[in-house]
Length: 356
Image 1 (spheres, rainbow, N blue to C red):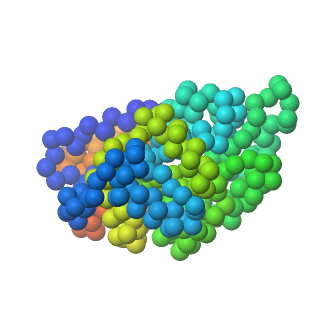
Image 2: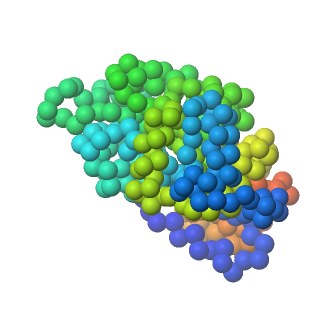
């Protein structure tokens, strides 16, 4: 599958009444409890530092990861971009896994807006980066070369948790070469549930960490950058420069606080549902299903080309939305329950029975 192809499934939900939407865990809607948090939010102007919901959320996130400070952002893309700009100057270079989100899906903003070069590093199919490959790309102190300043890593890749020991060793080697290390922890909490490791154990090796509130945790908007105070001070200025300073933003920060306090442990349900889905679809000989032991809430399905379009249409008629079936990604989240998984497995089975 060409990862650069446009995903035409983004507009499929418009006319559906009760869709079962597997496109992403970003499609979740705020719960009634979150909506109550919005109604009761203590608001102020966050640009002036006066929004109590934001201040409380930032303190809570910093404590959760055992870092000095945190800063609230409207998106993970902006949080990652700000982190990279906080660690790098114009003309510097950042090392990133070739297929990582920060390299492929964030429009190369660090280069376009920050004048920072990107050096992509090959990774395995599961997202692992070889230490020697990383070290080989760190440039000597020579005026002909960009100055390598930062290594960016992910701790989940296509739903698979990266071995923590490998991430820690990569960070250790990068630090030994005077590089900073940033973690795109968009699904950090899925890794926490899957491995049982504490937030501190998962993030201690990194100088900065971006965490997302609007994926599996179910908040409608928001990410946080968590780091030492000096980095957050730089990030605060950069966030304003990038247009991320918001006013009475406690209406969404309150949802983020609810998510962190109430929705982390429930991620196990998503992992269990993904496993159930993988097992059910694996029983169909027409499908090839990719679901490893380190997988969290994602199932990857490959369907023979002649069946892809008619199967997608068949499922959509039953209000089941999926990505394309050329190693299509099915993502479980709080909007999908066990009964939905069983219904979807039956729908796949029904299609292949009818098309036989």
